[in-house]
Length: 540
Image 1 (cartoon, rainbow, N blue to C red):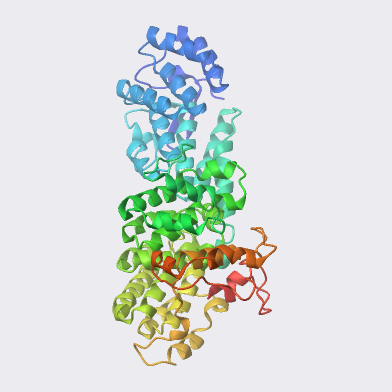
Image 2: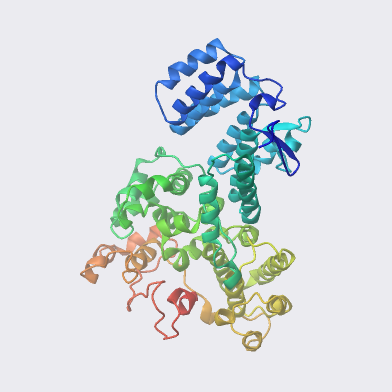
């Protein structure tokens, strides 16, 4: 260690002596021991620290660390509002105080709002650019700043940048000969590496790893108390008369309540996940989706799309096989007059693979049911594929699995107008031929029908709520839901419905009864290919 205690690292001069750092204001030396003692009490969650800090804040209003420690104490104890308010006071009084800025960034990251971080730390994410007038920084300033920047990069999926940050942090601790671990940043990097572990092998785009909305524990308030039935009954146990009563309610207020249920699934995901609930106790989200479809709540499409933006863990938690079995029907009914919004979802970064593929299924089915929409949907697919090619280096968008299934959808509605775009995808080597077939096979299939004529074989029926519920109840082979000892029991309630009851359902058809056992999405495909069903015949 140099005698003057100054160390060079990259463009920085660092010191372990706080009084050698060129801060605008230094803490009085007679308070250093007090500050250190208070700091350790705060991080150790010592409740007596609150009274002590309030006293010190009142006695030394111009010493920022005391307010910083109190804000940190509140944050550690989950009192986010108090922590945020204290930090706002800190920023107002000391706008250039680094730790107030870092606290603000931590709040944004906790609320899944990383887009706001550059407004606090600067676009370059460099400490010297944030304080261009300074020449010497205390080592804790450097370490805390860049650890926070590293976590920001993890939140926006910039794994390479985060790893460089972590490497530099440990280089500095080695140069300064200090003992410091960066466990939170290391954990975030490990999580990202795990999520991205197969990218180079299968061309899978990286996906969102945390919910898009802040996590809460408080249940929402509903206009109609009957909405609570959705939380009390599983999808296959709710009495038909309850569904009938729900559908008889005034549509606008019912729609708002159902949207609140979907948002509740996102906002209270951590809460429900921690409860260890039985799989049948979390069907409220599916109830809401199917009921929104039933009342044809087109205004609710943005809410459903927000649900589909969630990470795979959340979607699997609430939807299981319904994501790839039936959610396309919800998108069909709500998006039939909002095709651009559906197509735009395919272009969004970080969305889950199967959420994106179901958007394409919905677009395909709309075209098959409404041939007059063909020109519009063809143009949307062309725009999506062109977007993929333009953004070929973006690992959060380009996904060979999604692209391969989109090609399947295009061939099924005979989209030969899109053959030039399909050829480009093959040229980019973005197509998994085990899923979509070779380019020659695709061209042969597209040549089987005249242009503008679709194969009706691939048109699927739109089911009402009871049909969807019955199909969902039969998911017994996935080892994820309990089976029924008596299949007849499953349909007793549905079969007892009067013919007049069908007025509540827009499709008006009789309850669907599956005649063959359903193959679980993760089970081997019955065709004998050796692949999982979801990656083989389960694609249809």
